[in-house]
Every structure is written in C-alpha cells, then in structure tokens.
Image (cartoon, rainbow, N blue to C red; front, side, top):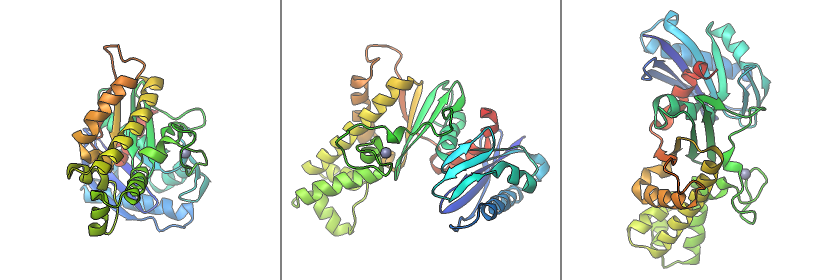
Length: 317
Ligand SMILES: [Zn+2]
C-alpha cells in the first residue's frame, strides 16, 4: 500500500492527514495556525503535524510517496510558491523548497478550493468525471475546476473564482469590490443577510420569532421557518435558490462539466434545496434540450476534501 500526506493550511488550523492509495484517511493531526506568524514558522508546523500524522498512522516516512499542501490565496503550483495570501500574510513564499528541507519527499502546493475540488474528483462526488466543477457555499463561494482530470487555475494560477462573477450589477457590494457577485447572494453569509432583511421587514414572521428564541440568525433559519409553514421564510429560500440556480447555470454554460458538485453547510438541507435548484437550472442552461446534461450532486467528503485532494496533488501535475 502506498501512502500520501495531505495538508490543509487554514487561517485558524493547520490540518494534516495520511491518506492511503485507495483514498482512505488513515490518521489526522492538527495544530493552531496562530496568525500572524512568519511563513517559515508556519511551514515548520506543517512539517511537524505531517510527521505526527505519519507516527499516528503507525507508518515510517519511507512509506510516504508525496506531500501536498492546500493553501488560501494564489499558489503557483508549477514553481511551488504561494505567491500571495492575504489571509496568511504570505508573499512569494517558496513553500515547496522549504518543505523539502524538512520532509524529503516530492511536494506540491495548490489553492485550497482547488485542492478540495480535486479531492471530490479523485475520491468523492465528482469521481469518474472527466470534467467537473465544484462550488462550495460557505462564508464565501469557492470554486474549483477540473478539466480532463487536471486542476485548471488559469495562466496566472488565480482562476476558478466562480464566486466573483456578477449576477446582479445593482446588487450589494462584494468583498472583492464589485457589486452583486454570485458570492454575495449564494454564500451562507448572503443567505443570512437576506434572512435578516426579510425578518426585519416582517416582524410577524416565524423567522423573527425564531430569532428571538435562538438569539441569532443562521443559514438554517429561513429553511426552518419554511418547514414551519412561514410564508416569509419560503420567500427567502425561493430567492436564495433562484440566485444559486443563476450562478450554477452560468457555470454550466461556460464549462459543460460532466458533474457539478456543490458543497458547504447549506447542502445539508437536502431535497428542499436540491430539487427546486435542479429544476430551475434545467430550465436555464443553454443545453436544456440536450440529453447530455450536467449532473448536479452534493459534495461527499466535507472537510476531508481538502486533505484528500492535497494528498494526491502529484497526480494532477
Ligand atoms: Zn466578488
């Protein structure tokens, strides 16, 4: 059996896992990222948790084939450099060179959303696809594109920013400076904003009552209110799904992937999200009369996608 190390470098935690060649996570370890810190110190901790994961798996380093790192920001996967990460404070950091002095194995680096998409492609919901797009609905909307089995990140390694395509030029301002980005509407943050707007507009709504009981609004509030028969809650859900369908239909029209995979907490809503979404997308895509339509599926690997995808980055090169 061959084994690989996947590292998911985040703003809060550094997670590492040993993954077997049949895509099972054998062991996992983590430590705090403790920002702000120099890039070198973070890299040393990445190596430390990686070696701990090898120990925990009862393996020796000889049994490890390669190390892969998923990082926020722009990762030049050809040169092994994290060119820029606002989140981590990195600028042209030669992460692969440094990592190889700490763990002498082939090492790869990739943007974290791309690594997670690659995880779903090799072992999750997009397995078996030739072309796949993964969209993660979290604090923002992340994107990862797989073309002919390889990660596609553009000529400058900054591609796949599906969340920052505009679906309403008059919409609310996005963190990127544009207005009405897909992310502004279809992220969990966007859903919470739309829920709050509707709640304050209708204080007789179930959403308002739920807010008073729970003391907070979450991405589940509108869905829960809808299930409790709230008209205002259903309106928020319908609006959310309309925007999501728009962004997904745009993505399908550009890439026509075999599989479009959506992930993130809101996907736990299941059929009340997925069924109307699929129906709307089917009506909107350019190929609506074609038999060969993109399959829309829910991501399978959850938070493990980043580790699994990073572990196998060598296969995408
Ligand atoms: Zn944006």
